[in-house]
Length: 89
Image (cartoon, rainbow, N blue to C red):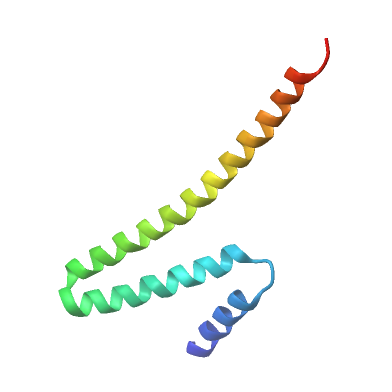
């Protein structure tokens, strides 16, 4: 079972062009590590903190991608609008 998980992890990290998979693997490792460390230190409250850290990292990751997409769309539409305003009548 452990070998299978390690093989899956290596395949996901080393696959070319699968940035989403790589980010998810890193987030999973961070979640498991923080769960273990915080649960050992603080008990069940540590597990709650671990889940909070996990969700915060996922929100930050998705927000960054969403903002980049929004800025791209704004640039595309502002260039199109500027092109229409500058055209001769």
